Amino acid sequence: MRTALLQSSGRPGSPAENLKVLDEAAGRAAARGAGLLVTSELFLTGYAIGDDIAVLAEAADGDSADAVAEIAGRHGLAVGYGYPERDGERVFNAVQLIAADGTRLANYRKTHLFGCFERDHFTPGEQPVVQAELNGLTVGLMICYDVEFPENVRAHALAGTDLLLVPTAQMHPFQFVAESVVPVRAFENQMYVAYVNRVGPEGEFEFVGLSVLAGPDGTSRARAGRGEELVLADADPAFLAASREANPYLRD
Image (cartoon, rainbow, N blue to C red; front, side, top):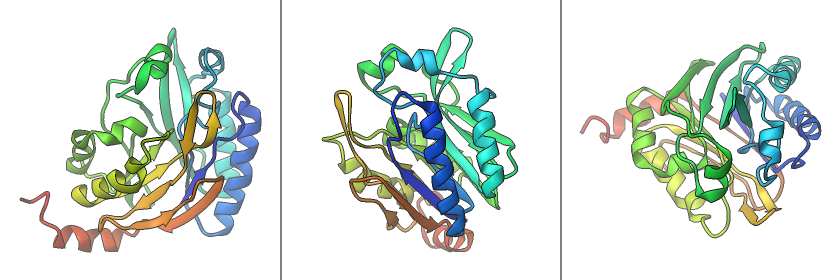
């Protein structure tokens, strides 16, 4: 499955503008044969927008979800996007996966909140492994800091995840996570990992880009730079099966 990584911070504070950015990127990704497009963490609203997080948060089946479903259906590809999810009085840092036919496949709430900003604005999720079947692959969902805990990714490996989607807001000076940790996670757990970052300054943060689709052999199948970018690479079930047969980590 050709997977497109939309490395972008969009337009912080404007879901309407971010949906336009998503629509344009989906068109470009589909034209290049992508079956899946993945955005950065909190792409729908922006990350460093303070109390506007709670104001702009929506239900998983809200108007923005309907808009993303329409984009997915019109361009014929699945979309995994980061957004703040409202559930009653609680707000979660979430990622939702919507199929090419507009069906909502899975919704994940970030379990490991990073820093005071996130802990002040979000409730931690409680379900560590969320998966869906998509185009012959078992796709798992995770967000940013979650992937830095080896136990989290191993839980996905043991549950059969083939492709792990990780919208992220990776900031300076922690770029070694994108450069080194994520490819190692893919190798040690024998899966593909799509790690999709924000870019540039936003509030007090400086996001470093370097989005990557890492393969089960530990190589970077696609790697973005430090600016706004759309990169694509294939998550190949046949290669994954051969890699798992050759690599004994999980068996041992």
